[in-house]
Amino acid sequence: MRVAVLLEERCKPNSNAFAYLQKYAAMCERDCIQVEDNKCKILETACPVCLTRAKHCPDNAVKIINLPEELDHDMTHSYGKNGFRLFRLPSPREEQVVGILGPNGIGKSTAINILSGSIRPNLGDLDNPLPDWQEVVNSFPRGELRDYLGLLSEDGVSISVKPQYIDKLPKIFEGDVCELLDRVDERGEVSEFAGLLGIEHILNRKLVDLSGGELQRVAICATLLKEADVYFFDEPSSYLDIYERMRMVGIVQSLASRGKRVLVVEHDLAILDVLCDLIHVIYGERAAYGIFTPPRSTRTAINAYLEGFLTEENVRIRDKPIQFLRARDRGEEVGIPLLKWGDMEKKLGDFELTTGEGQVRSAEVVGVVGPNSTGKTTMVRIIAGEMEPDQGWCTMDSVVSYKPQHVSTDFEGLVSDWLGSDIGPT
Image 1 (cartoon, rainbow, N blue to C red):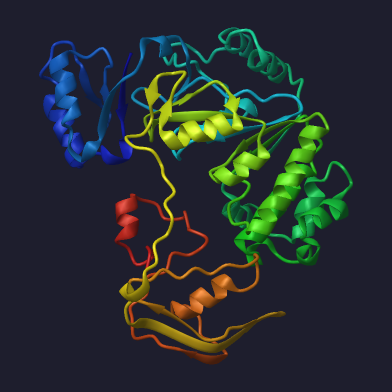
Image 2: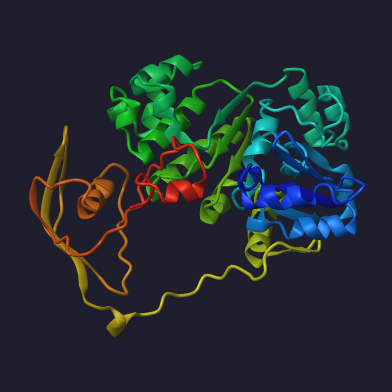
């Protein structure tokens, strides 16, 4: 099975890739490469000569990928001609927490959108109208996934989803935390769940004033307050400190113990290990395709992912294994101080930050560890020169590059344009 993927953001009119494909569009009588209405298309049945031409498209705008023939009948969804393909789906299970493990950009969130009913899969057939739900259900083999999709097609399950991009919440809702939670509360238990997640003290604050960890806990709380049969959590541990991650684990597991289906997308292997009953590994190529494996036991799935080889599928998903090496003692390799600070103080509303003395030296990595909302980001912003301390001192002899906690997605344009702009990383 051959997949031809065209990355449209790299093949816009006036780009090198567009000019290249336009040059070869009329050179084959089979119209293997087509350019119409400022859009390019490559037939997956293209002749060998045209496929070779497409492979050499500038800026890596075209990917030609050969996949096993058995996947020909397993395509779940495709984002258009020469677009991303998703093969198979994970299966939510009653009274279990099912995890999804895999790299970014290969279909994890798409799978959640399908299983939550936000997207009806097209089964890869772009030439016919969107199939009805019964056709979708019948395309899957008998089993738990097919039964679940049958319930979904008949509105037989209620669903609650914790989204991945929590930083967008303040743009969607401008009110206080309590207003948001009251709006979604179907249990009448805002106080109880706010206590479970440790967010009672921020109920009267605006979403825009919250830290990443606080936003994450608010999003989890809003998800839990919906009375549902199935709960989806997309990256629930991001922004959370170690204590909050373990608290989240206990809360999510309690859903499964009450008979709920729970599906979790997560990158933290330690959290997956303690949280999940089963794990689906997803592998593929970013922006091109993603393939879900059948569920494995948690330990087996994590070990296979680290090894980079899926024994049952006889597929290598990575050139070499991921190994955790013991850190070496840098000793005398640490160089001269580049940054120094001491006795800094900063007051932001009711919050007060006080630091001792510290420094960062060349050839050294310094970590900052502590609970959410205790001033880690504030201290880093002062050191980076984004904020002035009320008291204390910080040497600014070195040039500092600062990656913020929240990344703005308002910029319209290519990533390369954003990186070269004044609002890019500094």
